[in-house]
Amino acid sequence: MKKIIFVVNMLLLMALIALDVVYIVEKTLLIKALTSSIFVIIGIINTIFAIKSKANLKFPIIMLVGLVLAMLGDILLGVDFIVGAALFAAGHVFFFISYCALSKFTFIDIIYGVIIFVPSVLFMIFAPMFNYGGILMEVVCVVYAVIISFMVGKSISLLVSRKNMLSLLILIGSVMFFLSDFMLLLVRFGDIAIADILCLVLYYPAEFLLAFSIFVHSLKSASDVDVKDGEKVGEQ
Figure 1 (cartoon, rainbow, N blue to C red):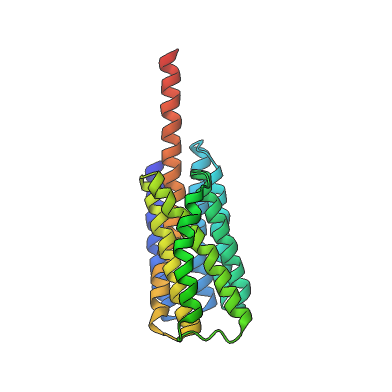
Figure 2 (figure 1 turned 60 degrees about the horizontal axis):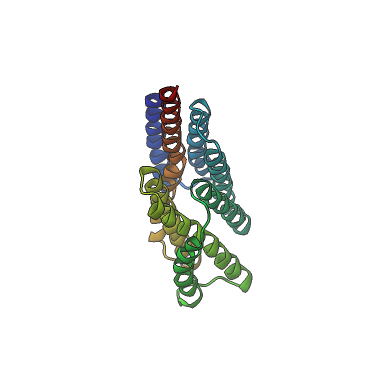
């Protein structure tokens, strides 16, 4: 079954990339909604696989909630920026919690988060290219930056403490998500048009990696269960 699920993931990735390209050319809300729905579908399929594999479901379920919130944030961002940003921020909180389900929250997570958000926030506040149009929008962007910085910080900590494919996928996905949001900031408040394409090139693959991490986690979790069952049989 795992081979079938892997193939399905790859096919959906190709569909995601194709729709991403279409959306870059033809920016409509319908295409955006379709594109965003794909990474949620991937997350759902991989969560079902996790259930059937009898894997630990804490990480998959929390990650799936984060993916759904990201989809909603993506769709609503063009309708109401603050609402969309709030949904994205909530998604990052769930991503962070899902990472903590793999490795408990520690003080070093705070250190990594601070290292990321301090220069990011300083750049956002003092770079002359940005025009937020008011203090409210600037505060919203700064708060969002703090949240996503701690999410990325936890992904770094996760790879440092657990050097495996799952941690690597999560780190790459998280960093790509961070960079895509930075590109969005340059487009929205810095009026740098080329950053729009970079944002989309980074964003959807990032979401795929996070959704695909559920599948990788399920393989690892199921393998651990098999090992433990084998040890019990050997003891008997």
